[in-house]
Image 1: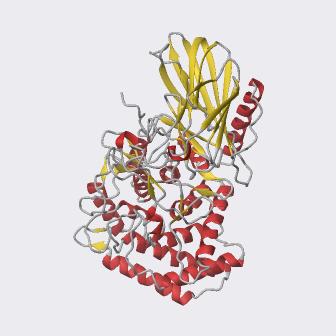
Image 2: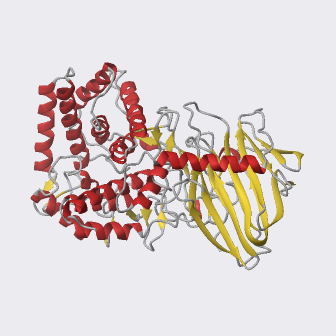
Image 3: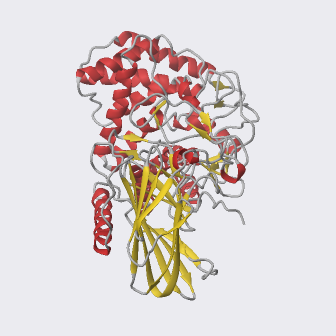
Length: 610
């Protein structure tokens, strides 16, 4: 059997600064700390032998035939992994208590609870951290049987347990074997510390229960802000919680996914690092969160985007970068971790993302789209002045080839989607300037807006295909254009849009699953293929709904939901055998799921449908 679990066989927990994946084997096989974009502590998901893990599960040697079910406690980010065996029913409960402070912290804690519901069940604990992507050695000390300190040069991990979990050394790692009877509970706490940091106090059963209650109360309280009461409440709530888990509380930044290196094709080279914040994702999330009623998060994301705009417009000629670290740092140099084999041999494993240096002109439109959300007020005049300078910069540079929304590495093109979003930048800038009486070169912006529209209609339209195409020198279709009606470039029932949608139906859609584009017809500079793109599948649902094809949209949406994993999460793609591929869970997919549900509910309500 493969030592690598399917990507989908995980739940995610987090404290709003870090996140960890819990597999159905009881492994924490992914955890980067003290931030989402920090080097990993556990990463056996990318190298079974060298990545590191923390396992807490029933002892498979003693209970080889245990069946496993994993779930979330409803309305929370608490993962329960349940083991069902002839000897009894046991559970491992995993959570992190959210940190609501605005200050970054070097201390992060995962609480793992083992309990038995019925019978008498043996457990095993293995804690094998591998610091700094497995590159830094560590030393173990055991002050007592319930405390272990694992020290590396840049970080320390403290493992503390309650009885009867007695820790033993296994080289420089720790293990334990223990048995619980019905009604008994044992806790394992993993706390990261800066070098020389003071270890936390020893846990007690009462403190573990109090932390559990506090975590549950946080998520219940947070979900109360949601104003969604539609037909798909459970999956929308799960998507909203997932977006919250992928948000970095100190800055408001939303990362693209919790992981790096998970392949778009097993054994292929399309293995990217998604632990950063894209201007595009963060900007489009603003409308989604406002639509759900999470205005605080929406404002935090908008503030983060505005700060990046202010920084970009502060230097003469400096442009906005497409992605940043969660604290706004633009340095994301890409390196290959040559000592790791990658998930199921999918090499190279990349840390950092060289696409940060690409030119993607669409991000200016997405930033403007975020600023125009809600009341469209930029707040302080300084923020408007920075945005105005950026729009002025764009008026001179919009008519250029770029790498495009999909970050291709095969050379720049005149991508239609990039031009459409440049139109959005000028259109929203003009609207905001007029609505809030802000200083602006309205004539110049309006002229640029109209020029972009004329160019897209003339050069982005294929008379042969009767569709808008990927870029000006191709007949290839591109699912990114599903956003054209959403941003108001054209009506969702415009005849030219409906024939574009028909063309996508024929070429990009496979039983509700949507491909981004055809890499064979439009080479992107990379070897291999990819699966259908979950983001595009949900954009397709929304486009169908807005076009009046509500029955088709509802069918496609319900079909897509069957591809969610056992706890309602989506990775980036669906592979040829229905498996989830790519980084996990992907924020953009869950954003699009929420938008599709909102659009469908609106259209169904308009029809008076059940």
